[in-house]
Length: 268
Image (cartoon, rainbow, N blue to C red; front, side, top):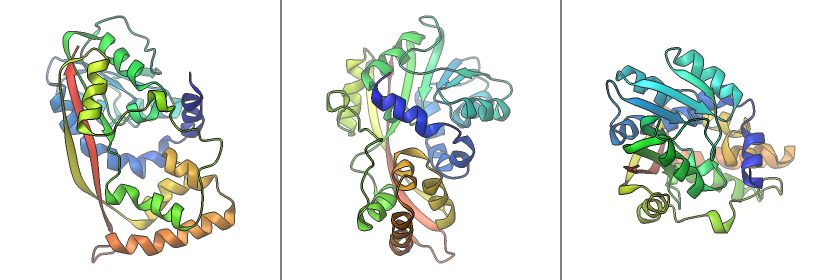
C-alpha cells in the first residue's frame, strides 16, 4: 500500500458508528443512481466495494440482486453485516480484491476511489472482477467542491489551521481532474469501455450538531484535519463553523448544504 493508503486505514479505524450518524447519510443520496448505472436488479450478482455501513448493499438486495460486499475497515464490515444479513460481507482492500476474474455481473463503489492511493489500479481491479461486458459504476466528489461540501474546509481556513503532516495528500502522479471529462478518462485508462460520466447535484439536509459531529469525530480527510488540531484551534474552527453555517441555515434551524458528485460507469 502507498503512504496515502496507510493513512486512510488509520483514519478510518473504528469510525463506522460516527460515519453512519453523520457523513454516511450524505453518501446515501448517490446509491440509487449508482445502482441504476450498474444495471443492478433481480438476479444480478453484484459486488459493492467499500460498502461502509452497507447502504448500497442493502439497496441492491432490496432490488433482488445477489450481493457480495467488501470494506477495508473491520468496523464497517461488522456494521454492514448487521444491516444486510442476506449479503456476503467480508474484508477486502483495493487494489487487490479477494475474487477471481469475472466473478460479478456488476461492480459498484460509492465514494471509494477518493480514498485509495492508486485510483487507476483500483479501477482496473474493479474491471477485473466484473465479467466481460459487465457494468462497473463509481462515484467521487467533484473538485472544486460544491458550497455545502466546502463549509468545513472554509472554517478550517478561517481559523488559521493547516493540514497536519501525518495526513499525506495523493501523489500528483496518481491524481486526476475531478471533472466529468477527467473522471471518465480515468475509467477509460483502466480499460473500461462505453464510459459515461455525469454530475449529481443535491441539497443535503442535516443539523449543525450532526455535521460538526462527523468532523470532530475524525471522519474523512476533513475530520482528520480538524480532530488533529490543538484544543484551542479546534475551538476556533468550531466558532468559525457556527458563523459560516448561518449561510445555509433554514428557518427550522437545519442546514441545507449543496453537494455535487460525479457518477461514472462503463463496461468491463
